[in-house]
Length: 263
Image (tube, rainbow, N blue to C red; front, side, top):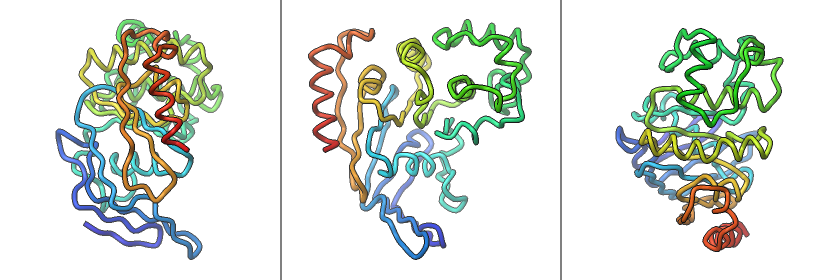
């Protein structure tokens, strides 16, 4: 398939399928602006088929968000993969994903395919406490705030909850912890790992923090400056699920492999 317009040229042999939406073969993507062209992907193959958490790390501009937008059907209507409807996508810019004029509660309960559809504040807080206990407690004050009145971290937590409560097997999380402090990240990550495993979800997370990726993911994919033709896949073996894993000998080996790949 090939499409050319004023903003981009894109071509691929295959893109997504019902059971494996995180899949593309022979992808080419070129952006066009002000008479200039930039090739992001060329002869690029990618596939994530196993449940679990898979981290994607790479420099700015290497195509992480472009790949997410493509797989979620957000790049262009004519290139939307048939599997896009099976994916819940937390985009990087929470000012776009969480409308500022809606309250925190409305942003969670007005989602068509969300488990909190039309829930009250009481029901919402109980659901988060029972089903997502790793999410820091959200007070009634936060849930009653308009999103435009929230801090960046509060807004990002609302965005993460909104994504996790959608009834989808496949999730794309684009820098979901970038506005959260270390304490909240260390609180959320181990619980998110348990939640993904218990619910048999397949998740790809874009991030810049190597330690967060080692703490969170089963595998780490490392990209490089464009044009990108492949990601380096690094298995993140672990002997324990606590933060001590980040300090282990195995983690140091993974960390060095990631740093070598980024150079």
